[in-house]
Length: 221
Image (cartoon, rainbow, N blue to C red):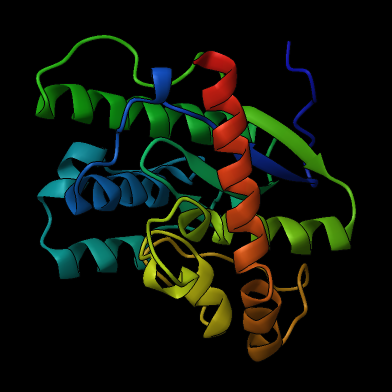
C-alpha cells in the first residue's frame, strides 16, 4: 500500500529513479522515446498499439494523437526528465489513473531500453513515489523546483536550455509542446513573471544541490 493515496481530482508530485543511479537517458533519442511513450499512454483506451504508432511517419503520428478520442488518465501540469529520473506534476482524472499511466509508460520504456542496449532486468526502483500537493503556493514552488533540476545538476546554465521539461511551455505560455501540458485553471502567472520567479532561484537551488552532494559523498566515503 502506498504511503500517500493517489486521490482522483487531486494534484500529485510523482517521481521515480533508476536502479542504483543508472544513467537511463544517455542520448537525445532516449529522451524523445520516453516523452513519446508518455504522450501515447495518457489514455484510458487506445485503438492502436504503441509499436504500430511508432511505425507511422512523424506527421501521421501527430495527426493520430490529435484525432483520437480524448480520454486522458491524468492531466500533465509540468514535467522534467533528468538522466536518472523523471519528475511529473499530475492531476489524477480517473480512478487509478496515475498508477495505470506510470506503469504502462515505464514498462514500455523498459522493454525498449533493454532491447536497445541488450540488457535484462528492471530499470526503475520498485515503486514510483508520490506526494500530494495541497496548496497553490506549494504547487508554484514545486514547478520551479523541477524546472530548475537541470541547472542544479550542472547540465545547463539556464532552464530554458534544457529541452526535456515543460519550462519553455510555461515561459512561452504554450501548453502544446512535445509532451502537451495543461495548467489552465490551476496556475495563473504571467510568463515573464514566472521566468523571473524561476531565475531568481537558480544560484540558491544550485548551491543546495552541491551541499547535498558533498554531504552524501562525505557520509559514504
